Amino acid sequence: MQTISTYLLERVGLSVEERAGRLQSVNSSFSDWLAQKGVTDPNTAAGEFESETPGGGGRYTREVVDVDGEYAEELILRERANESQEFVTRVCLIGSQDKVSVYASVSASNINTKISPRPTNGRCPAVLRDVIRRHGDWELNDAALPSGKPQHFYDTDGGIEVCRIILSGQRKFPLVLVSQQRGEFVWDALDRKIASDLVGLGYVSTINEEAAKEVSRRLGRKFACFDGAVRIYWPSGGTALDQMASSVWTPERMLESPIHSNAEDRFRSLLRYRVMSAAALSISEPPEISAAFRAQARKRLADLHRTASDSAEAWEIANSLVSDLDAAQRKLVEITAELSMERTRAENAEAQLEYARNNPPANESDAHAGVDDELNDDEAQDDIAPGEVIYYKKIYSTPNHDVMRRRGDCGHNRWTAAHSADKAWKGVEKLEGRDDWQSFHHCDRCDGGGMWKVVW
Image 1: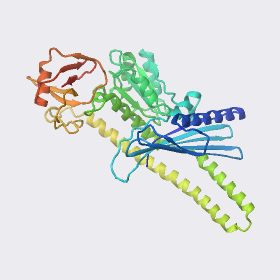
Image 2: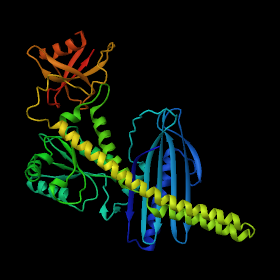
Image 3: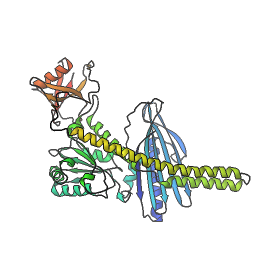
Image 4: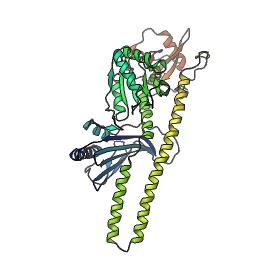
């Protein structure tokens, strides 16, 4: 099983009444979530429901413990995502003293035993979205939890404020900065969609062109974000630029997509994966969860011991097993921390390699000498069916024709008929070996050579 992401919501300083109200509210969100899944009686300890996936099914378990004022509830939902994968969502509610916490993990496992990579398109569970919507005061390590709504910064003052946030050593969450180009994002409402994708995990902010200039002036081109680019600024331990870690996607890179795919969906999935992977290694399960359930187990054993005086040996064995579980839990936390450190080193190495790849030396040979196209999948041309829609990207131009490659849909939906595009026509004809298309359209939003939509 692979952990896709983890979440942690905390609220501290609650009165007795506020704590009880918050626990009841989150408990209601759990029940509503199960009801939306089709569970007839969400309050039962276990059950099944019809999955949205054809031929699939879902099941859940729900357990509540309340020992000496310490409350814990665990809801585990297993749902088949497709023919080969099952998603497991575990949500825990903890109430102790003046604090209420909600911990969640999203995992995926292969149904069969084939050892092969499977794409996992994780998303924030709907139950967490509801919990965050009901209460806007959740925190994590004294930092306000990302609400799922973008924040906007304009002009010079906005750029100054964004830089202050980026360089703050107190920031706990990644900041995703979305820039504009000629007053537009690469895709319409991209900022709102990313903010919704990263609710609970990352802040999302937008800047206009004047604010982007100020960010470039203060941070330098290496850490800038402009002309429609999207950049993640990861939290750092200090305010120096040499301590900053970030990843950037230019519009050209965002619009690249394999054949038979949608560029916007692909980019958002990649961004979610980056942030969720970091969260899975950074957010650990609160120890109060296992402590509450172990306290419940000890209480049951104690009750059994009082009612069965001749079971002293069984009591000692069971009590020893619970102690062993405590030790195993502590060891697991240590191993998880070590794994997180190794994963961080690997991510840093990957980021450095990516930067080197995207910033080649000035004396590098002509880029067109050998186009190493990672997105071609297998560009051996298949038979094209009548009415089939194929998208093409101009890679570069020759005196007689444009060099074209098949691509996925850019997602803009701003197509205009190409009445005079001789070099593009010749490029597609050279690639496909035919010119019997029904229509030939150009995308008005794509730059860098442009995108073409051809209906055969």
